[in-house]
Image 1: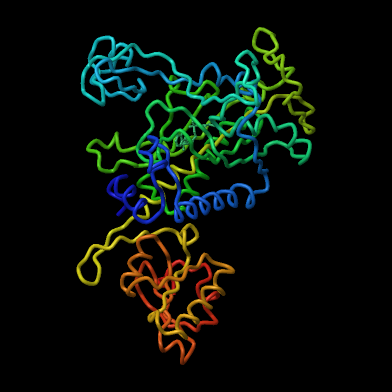
Image 2: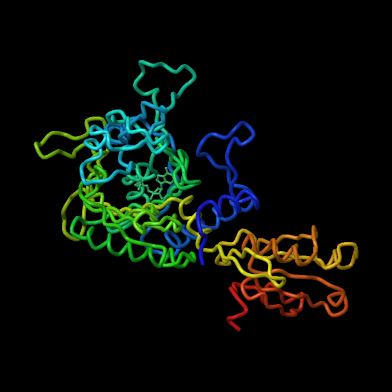
Length: 475
Ligand code: GAP
């Protein structure tokens, strides 16, 4: 069983410190969220897991961490300044603002026609009186420098809407320093920003978010098969995070919906809205895998030409073409890009891990069945008596020892039943209790989150016993 709806996760997140509404004490900021003590651990674990899988375990991927703010020309030449728009419409009645392509109505005509005919209802007030859709630039901008000069072209800067461009503009640097040959990839994790017209659904759509992107540079003829390969790779990786295949779907993006740089995109969809009546409305995008062609490598190159033989980029000082030493050809590499959001992954991981069970007294118990390597806390050490000095000091010593290799916490703030329940609810795979017997024979009780089974283990063998075990059921 996964979470019945996002609301359940919102409540759990706030109650237990995964995610809080940002600027809450000033009334919030509409769609901005802060990650609390458990949320930051979970997000870090997801990012580390991705980096290890994507960069460390492969032989063909380099890492990078590029600047969020780049020269404005980056966004001019990659086409974002001109095309990174959403079509926006206003409700004349209640003044709310909406993304035209997300509006629902009966019939198969275009949304523009449907709005003109007055058959589209405002999702906020229900009135069918919307303005003609018009483009809205969704890049967030700022002015840089001590004296922000409106007339200075370069004082306007954008907060990047994707991490990808920081990778493209460093392609030649990485090629030179790493001596790579195609195919190879460059990976990056970092914040991106979009002035979304209708953010919402908790951390699913926000104006500030984090992406894990990888740009895989290859020959044109290899790009189609690499798209398929990365779809398969990601299905496997998402499974390894505990996301069930039943909650994942693949969506072949139709030609008319493709981004300006893509000839094929496969979206990996997650069932974020299981409580919606219609199956088709239960899904939203978790990530996309695109064949970006040679659009970006050409867009930033000083020698690249368009179909009429005109130079595409008179401002670039470098050329992102590649010389293939095996075929003696020079060409602009194609790029296959798997792009996934940290926040959407975290939400999917939480939703899939959420379970409810009956407790020993017939009560409802929430157990977050997170993969142990993702759990914010690996092990909790709980003294059975908090006013017995020897028990407390043995428990604290165990905590200190385990902290060298695991995220361990000490907790004596409740009865043992309550402490177990709290750790279950945040997904801690193992709890250790220290009791009177421990003082005599130096053994402790280890309790498994998933089976609630308990075992007696020698205190000096705990690190080895816990190791990377997921469940006692494996014994
Ligand atoms: N470089 C390609 C690119 O950025 P995208 O589909 O626009 O493609 C990739 O974004 C991923 O980033 C999405 O699949 C999603 O996981 C995440 N993402 C995009 N916009 C987001 C937003 N407003 N809030 C949270 N995550 C977002």
